[in-house]
Length: 256
Image (cartoon, rainbow, N blue to C red):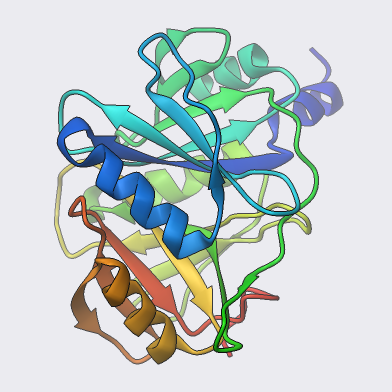
């Protein structure tokens, strides 16, 4: 396969995120993320009707929910590509482990984060939601949480799989990022954890033009406030998963 063709068919033209919810808290979690985003909900699908899509009022969908029968759930990524099989083969050569080929291909990154290659078409990034008080917000980032022993390999892996430039952060380099192309709905932030080992996981981040107001809205909807930082607030959703509300602009994704 020529290199130029391989790049075209294996690098993502869109990225979606799945909130994987334990069966015991699935309905509560779905209702929460619908309220947080202001999105509708598709009909369930899958062999066990375990999948559904959060449907924005305009633009193409990029957030989904899944009922998980075993385990605590979490967040995983769908990378939308022209050729999922070719993309999976490339990812395996870069250090991923293939889990299953179901038409879409399920894999784990070198550090263990589940992700999928899918071919679902999408092109129009939704606009931020505007709330009754005039503030706005949007889920626009997945933060990949990486124990120190996996950090360098995982950063190199995600840069290679996406084809996005890796931008190291300032010392002590707790955070770095991948340079998202225009039009793709989700940014990828890479966080080096204080943990020396353990599995790589991920959480969702929102951009908000009034973080304090957005946090209050989330708490009213059932979130739990965990920690306040200079530019972001850590909360947990009703199913117990952490996520963040940040001071980044909902329009640009940049720190206000």
